Image (tube, rainbow, N blue to C red; front, side, top):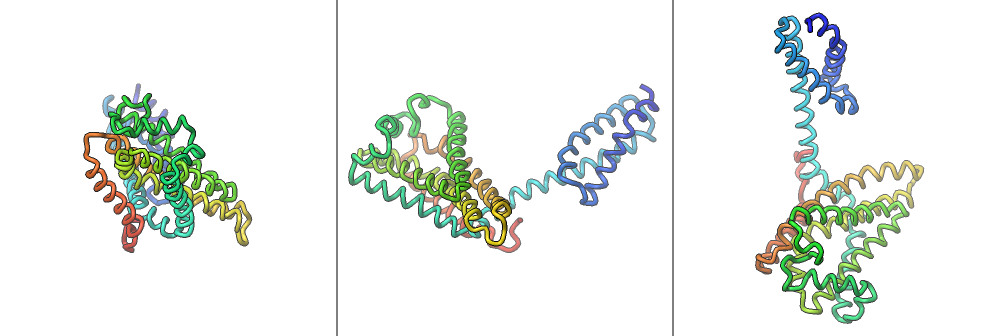
Length: 326
């Protein structure tokens, strides 16, 4: 292809790319513009490679090289900003948000952990109570999963031989399903979140009380103590995010309920993003650490206690320094 034909065919694309670059460099670009920018950049690089391969004049190649260089700088500058924003949220934004919403967090934690501990004690003292909360089939399955003779703890018979990475995926989907259910139910004026917080607390507590009563306490508690720091905390925080939605509907103040809900959703969705991070960590620990039987229980207890302290310290102190990343 002759240089003149190549140039006339693609000149409008290069001009559009140059205008987009100007907008990005001046900080005036829209988010939708940035979404298409990598595609336009790759196309320009292809045109530059063709121009160089075909030996076109420097009159054409040099401007394309300048556009490619400017595009490269903008592409990776925005990528680094995204990475910085994500790290800033993890290291400071999320724990700050949890502390800011401490009232909802406190209420959700009391509902979840009080029901869990309370029913665990009752089932331990009155063993037959377990069958009023959990079906006999589920009880039998739990007993098989935490049998001291099991090759992998916390896995049903049909999943006992699954590879750890497959179980990681299973735990992620299962835990995220519970958390999202607890969060989204807050749209029922908060009552849905209250229900699922108490319901999940009763189920987990009843199972823990039963397994402790029948002598499976060591295998069960050594299994859950590690990932439980992230998983149980995440469930409570998901409930707190749901309660925030419910309260926005119950007490919108001078705003309409729609506007109040929209404003509350900004923070509650951010809270849910932090919950997802916690659940990913929990699923990784559960698949690769908690389920193994080659590690002594006392080691798991020490590691689990350290993880609980780490979560508490993170939510309490992270992001308090004024110059922490935003």
